Image 1 (cartoon, protein in one colour):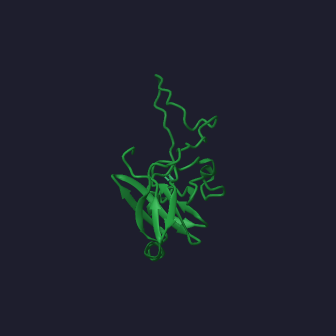
Image 2 (cartoon, rainbow, N blue to C red; image 1 turned 45 degrees about the horizontal axis):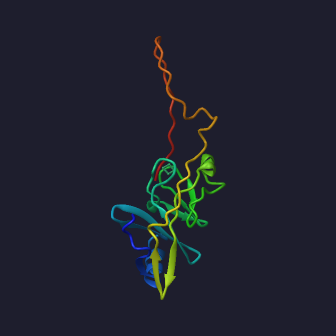
Image 3 (cartoon, rainbow, N blue to C red; image 1 turned 90 degrees about the vertical axis):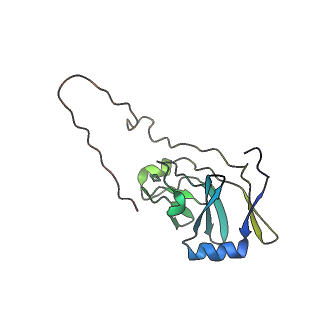
Length: 155
Ligand code: FES
C-alpha cells in the first residue's frame, strides 16, 4: 500500500448518491483486490473494510439501518463511518464486536476521494474473554460425547 497515492478518485458525488440511493445505500468498491464498502446515510458517505468483524461476511451485501451496516450473515451492525460495533444490534454479542476498519474520505470539487493508506486498525470482538465460547476442544478417551451447535438464519 506504500505505492498508493494519498487520495484515490471514487466518482462524482452526485452520481454516487444517485447510484447508492438506487442500490440500498451500499456499494462494493475494489482496489487491487482490496474490498471496501461505500455507504450513504443521511447524505453522508462512509467507507469501511468490507469484511465483517465476526466471521468475515461481506458487509456490502448487508443492509443499511439507522446509520449502521448490518452484516447479511448474522446481523452484526457497524457504524457506516466509524466501523464501531453498533450497541443494541439484533445480535446481542455484536455490541461487543470491536471495530471494522474505516477509511478516510474527502469531497473536493464535487468528487469523492478515498485514502487507501489511511485504513484504521481492526479491533477484534472481546466476547470470548471469560465466556468459554472460544475454548479449545478437550479430547479424552471414553464414550462418544456429542457437541451441540446452533446456527442463525442468514440472508
Ligand atoms: S459474519 Fe458478519 S455477523 Fe457473522
